[in-house]
Amino acid sequence: MRRTSALRAERTVRSEPAHRPPSWLEQYRDAKRAPFPGFIEPCQPTLRKRPPNGDDWVHEIKIDGYRAQLQVNDGKVRVYTRTGLDWTERFAPIAEAAKALAGRQLIMDGEATVFGKTGLPDFQALRRELGKRSSTRLTFQAFDLLYLDGYDLRNLPLVERKALLKDLLASQSGTLAYVDFLELEEGAQVYRHACKLGLEGIVSKRRDAPYRSGRQEIWIKAKCAKRASFPIIAFVEKLGARPRRIASLYLGRWEDDRLVYAGKAETGYTMAVAREIRERLDGHITGKSPLSQPIKKPKATWVEPVVEAEIAYGAETDDGLLREAVFKGLREESGAPARKAPKVARTRGSVPKENILQLLPDAVVPSKDELVGYWTRVADRALQDLGGRPLKLVRHVRGTTFYHKGPLPPIPPEVHQLRIQKREGGEGVRLWVDDLAGLLGLVEIGAVELHPWAATVDDIEHADTLIFDLDPGEGIPWEFVVETALNLRDRLKQEGFATWPKLTGGKGVHLMAPLPEKMTHNAVHAYAKRIAQEFAASDERYTTSAQAARRGKLFIDYLRNGRGTTAIGTYSPRARPGFPVAAPVTWRDIERGMRPDAFAIARLPKRRPR
Image 1: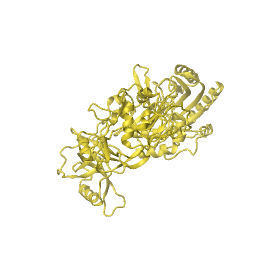
Image 2: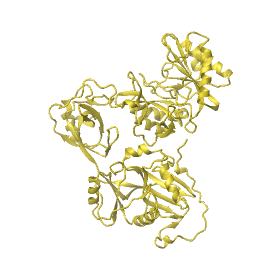
Image 3: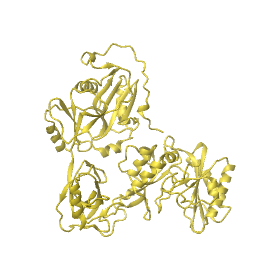
């Protein structure tokens, strides 16, 4: 699809103009003449509790962002991720700034980041800036230079590579910045100051070491952690443990008189402590969640929020969840809750009203683990129809299920963002994916149902598919739906369309007709309306009005055709009991009367029928 791997990039030696060795070689004799290597696996620091000391180490501030590799070769700029994915488009402002170096050949190692209002790196702000071609906040913090103008620099000592890098970036804009280092012998002193400033930590590097790919001891990282107390709201029992003990804790946070979910602490327990916590919580076990807005945690044993845990954590997400939470100890309980959660949970919990296009109060949703397992099994099949298309989402966030609209939460980097002009005016963002990682990224933000456009992200103004949704009201037998589907198939065949059926996982069936040539959304909408009205005129049991009473009527829904309108995506789960899925089937399956909820996330079709 759109994402390409630099690991497959061309490694052929490019012809280079004859030139005398650059003057800087007089100082740096370990630089070796070499062809442009393509993507280089990055050096990864080893995590330690404390930084090293001594004058053979230098220390850099650890920047919270995305590891990136900036390359310029033959006038072309590429920006790669830590794993070698080409993210040039997503890091467009960085690539644009690097065009000032287009006359050079170079490979720089660094971190893509955004600095927040406090002047510190802001990871959540970075996620919001990804994909903006004109972002003025996205920067590339360069800390190493691996290749320059026909020479491989990896065998040079670190401080020599950094000297060349500093000179190279001296005249560049703020988008491309040089990361300097400190030479204090006491690494612990640098680390303490970094933590006081609220930084993520430091990376200590051997000053005379070459650059080596993979996990290395020549780079050591020491991370700062924040610390606070949180009420324990539930625990997960260690299965089969004798004597009994906890495996992890669920945590809450008080917001005035409301108790909201704060995250999970899975590490930091010795066996003795895990037993102690289990016994301490035993007398506070309750049959229901103490949270103001309940959440689904099937393995949780809920407790009254009277015992508090000291937790060290790296950061908080925008929706208040702790990152890298580690248990440090228990605080004394107060004997009884000073504040109790309201007895009746608020319908919309902490979901902003502006995010709710339509509330689904009767929805039943799978767990995130179930969704991850499901998408992992069907991704290859599902992406044939879901990949590369703008999506409308049904999300489940803190007990609330809704069609999403408006501002988005922090988006995982594997999920792409497309900026569009909305029909009602103004600019909006639509998400799209092209691989399994993207589907799992959508699960991370609570997406349950995926509803794609009938257009692709490279041409959103033209439809490539015609869609009819046959939606039976109460009193309409399934046999009549089947008869209508077959008649509509034959009618469209006369018009030159080859259709295929999709069970919706709900009440009806979709007829999908790929267009031989792309058409404007208005043209497709008008055509679908004409066909639907022809059918409606043939039998009083049909309706083409979304506002009409549905009892005893079969709604031939042509409104799925139009700019920005969507239909449930092929292989998308539904937020319904049993977790049915929308599945492609054969016309033979339809003739046999196969029901719309025939398949579910635990009961998949054996193969893709078309």
